[in-house]
Image (cartoon, rainbow, N blue to C red):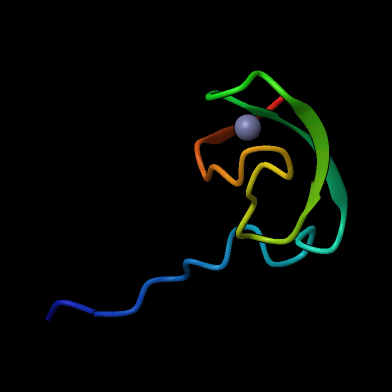
Length: 50
Ligand SMILES: [Zn+2]
């Protein structure tokens, strides 16, 4: 049978570490922590890991 609920706990362990992020909208680089990263300058959620 199909099993619904595969192990999908990826970024739980390092979710408390700060990482460098870069905003794709205003090119701002900043330190982010957690899962919901937003740009502190323009409040955009369109960011990527630098
Ligand atoms: Zn930004």
